[in-house]
Image (cartoon, rainbow, N blue to C red):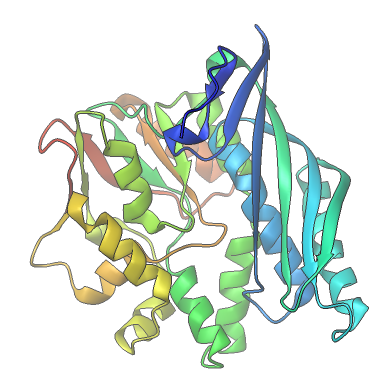
Length: 316
């Protein structure tokens, strides 16, 4: 498909990045993104919060400030209590208020399945845009949230996850990536993406393709929910994990010491996952300090960008 050329388009969808970026003036660009999905937890208010945090995350990953939001809603109004929808929207609004983002409207359609999300518009200086394509050889890779939400959400849908586990994973998913984004902007980093539907290794694969470098992931350093290991070993793995594995495995090489459950967790599609930040080695300790000061306490170095092998990720 031929795309219209526009010199003000800084980041378009052809770059497989987290959001689109369009230059308005020499000092102002717009960040635009949209995301919505079906409920992943039973509590409609928590679901609304998760969906909003997930949508906002793309703007944070680009290094921007979210400004306005519009709701996107599908709801079976004839078969489900309208109170459920009100709770979902209240959860989304409360998360937007926390993010200092203004809800300006939205659109709803009647549908036999609940879906909710938001279109977010943010702002950024055109010369300060962070993309997923600009990591540099020698950088360290820092992940700010643990993995395994897709696997645990599958267990939740199957009625196998306890309340403590549901609360723990929900608290992570409703947490904004705002403070992590502020920290990386203050320190100055090379590249960033957020870990969502393609899983850790899928999003890392997008960062290396066509860029002439590779990555090493230290499997033992990657944070994940202990419950994800438990459920993965029992086969509670979502279909998205297998789709990610089928598509992205061509760029991945696992050492023989990496167990199967970790491979599943690393391909696991995340909802409202953490930021994956590529930071110059000399700035990594400073970034971790800034993250800790902003209560992003689970952030950790999980790997590095290397010259060889090119366009491959070695998980060791």
